Amino acid sequence: MTPAINGQDWNEVRDWRRSTRGELLAQRLAIPRSEKLFLRPVIGGQVPLHFPELRHACIGFYWPFKGEVDPRHLLRDLIGMGAEAALPVVVEKAKPLEFWSWQPRSKLERGIWNIPVPAERKPVRPTALLVPLVGFDGSGYRLGYGGGYYDRTLAGLDPRPLTIGIGYACGRLSTIFPQPHDIPLDAIVTEAGVTRYRYRGQPLRAASHSDAVLSTGPSPGPSAAAAAGPALAEGGYASPPCALHELDPTYLGYMSTEEVITLLNKLVEAERAGARAVAEMGRQCAEAPERSILRDVAMDEARFCAMLSRHVVRLGGAPSAETGAFYGKVLALESSAERIALLNRGQGWVVRKLREAVGRIADGALLEDLRDMLKVHEDNIARCEAME
Image (cartoon, rainbow, N blue to C red; front, side, top):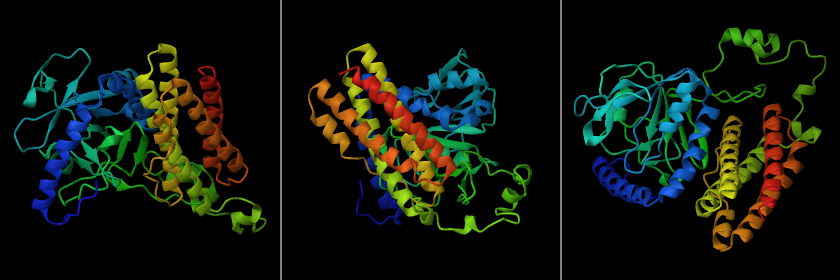
């Protein structure tokens, strides 16, 4: 959706948001329950994987409303890992939210819009928020229900909690025409993967050439750099015995940064198409064993879509927002056998691209992740072949 409106005219933007919100809510409510049940672990399973800090956080989450992704099973798992949880409560109209402590067996009562809230007021200060999405754009801005409660709440929290939007990929917009009062989220999670934009309100730093991994938390402090040794602490080399590090990687046969970003974005589009196609195949599959395999494959595709996007950002690029043509080709087929066969051909294409690339990747962290991706795709091909 790219409307021809003046993004600076608040009245015009507000009218557009109102109509777009209604369209997205109708679209979300039309998603069959069976598909939502299938997608719930695909979406929720990515959260502890990509945000391990949540295991030690106080997490403000939401009670599912109007077809939202249900996060309650995820919260029960995170509590089991050591996290605390809290639910948002509207204590006064047009004022910031309060968060009251919640446990799986907590007594609840009806709050505003009849959404359950804890019966006992035990205010806590969350260090992370799972925020429901009606819509969202590629910069991390959220389209909510129009009440402004989350924006008012975030504006008053210092330090900022980690904010993670949870929703369906169908809610993606080209822009929400952000206004000065809109506060972007740190990350967004859908069945198509995870995109991380910033950390607690601060843009992610551009990684240096010597970075080993993409940080999912705050930048390491001086003590961490010192522990890594003088070379890493200074960001360079201490009395290098030769000038090998100054060579252009392409001279040694490695791909240039631009070539790597192009490849990763092709793979992002393929994995996004695979995640969506396999999720739809799983929704339509009646056999429990096959459905379980397809759910695992969909989770892997979504996980790798997120991993590839993070590396694109780390290398200074912009992750592709496109979905590969594979998605439409799979859904155009009628029989399950034909779809599985095409799925495996698609996974085979990814395997070939990865095998060609791994010998030409100089970045150690990326190489490790691509090798993992290659192994998982090879295993998934074997699992799907057994279904044909």
